Length: 98
Image (cartoon, rainbow, N blue to C red; front, top):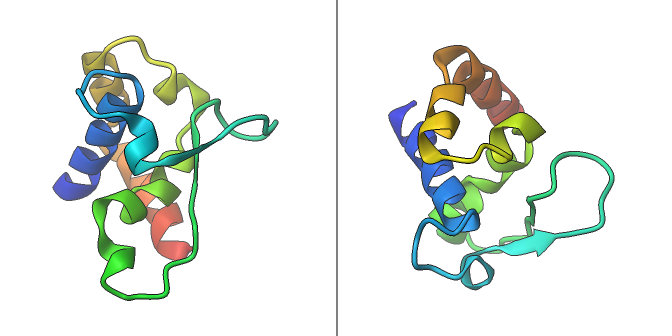
């Protein structure tokens, strides 16, 4: 659960520009879709088992299932407070069922 939460926080920091990493170097963003939030990430197919457990692959499903209110938070602390145990439990349940 801690790793899952830390992955989501790090993804938020990268996508929102709090880290000195270009989001396009790690993630392929999806624009122009009407469902979900405005910062959706495209998940490509992985042919190697080692690749599918990398940070950039394992976080995508959970990130795309976040509600708009979480992704559009203005600060890291607001995003962290949104990730309560109830929210993380629900996201992990959705993530594990995929």
